Each structure stands twice: as C-alpha cells, then as structure tokens.
Length: 219
Image (cartoon, rainbow, N blue to C red; front, side):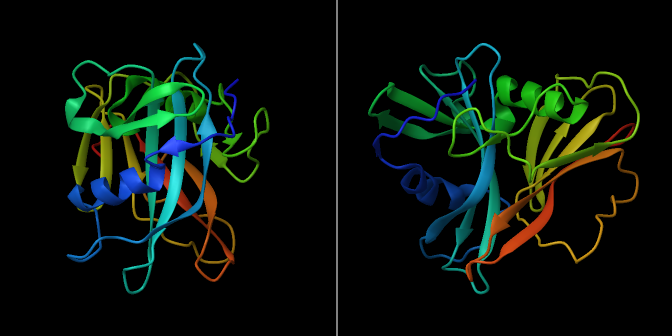
C-alpha cells in the first residue's frame, strides 16, 4: 500500500509539469507558458512498494477553452535506466529525499499495474488519502486472461499508444473529454476501458474515458 506523505516538494509537481508539458505532441496550448491547476486523478500501488504511481489530471487555464490532461507519472528513488527520454524532472521530497519523476507510459511498473487494474487484480486508490479505494475509477472489460506487459509507448497528436507485439493495444487519452450524460458506450472495436472523473474550472465534476483496450489491432 502506498503511503501519502504530507510534506513539501521542491519544485512542485505542477512546476515540473509546466516546463515539460509543452514538449508533448498532444499538448493543445499556445506559445505561452501553461497555467496548471490540479483537477483530480488516482493512484495505483506498486506491489514491491518502491515506485510511486499516480494518474494526475491537470487543467491548463491559459488555453481557451481550458484543456484538461491525463498525466500518468511514476516517482522513483533512483534514475530508471534507459528512460532518459521519459524523465519529467527531479524534485526534493521532504521525507523521501530526491525523487525522479517519469512519464509513466514509459515505466514498466506503471504499465504492469495498469494492466493489472484492467484485469481486475489491482484497485484504483485515492489520490490524496492512504489505503482508500477510488470508487470513481471504473473498469469494464469483455473477455478474460492476462494482458501482455511488453508494451511500447509512442506519443502522437491524439495521446499515447501502448502496443504489444501480439496486437494488444492500449490508447491513453491525454486530452480528457467530458462524456455525454448517460451510460458509457465503448468505442468501436474496444474490449475494455478505464473511466474516471475530474473537476472542471467551474468546480463541477466531469466523467470521461481515460484508457481504451483493443486486441488484434494497433491503438
């Protein structure tokens, strides 16, 4: 179980993300610096207790209209070999010391736990409270069996595609879109999806799709 520490981060997560976010191909802001506010998210536990795993939703209020992004992040006590391209930055944690923050789509621990969440072997946890499930994160899946974990991540204009050599594909929606009222309808060809909620700038709640699973095709 991940323990949420009430402490100081230097720089803060939002400060790291402000510098990193405009470098992403799915970033929808302009030439100016984004103005980020925390909009929600959830956590997953690392079974080994070594890596922090967070799916953070942040809203850029400098865009017109504001844009909310889904940012899967991992926090490590040492650099991850071969993942220099995925480094968001480093920060000093008041309890844990130096932490390396990564784009979690390129971190095998986050990818494995996301697969476990979709399989029903892991449970989404509250973003801010230890040992508390997040009931707003809902997983639906048709079929059974284990998902591969040998995904390769690639960013594009629409988000991040995690693809495996066996044809299984996970599409992470980096730009979150509120879903219409009523039950969720899975996208054509999808065999699973992860949905959740976040806070809009007017303080109301929105729900939408975070990730979509397909088999036998590319994301």
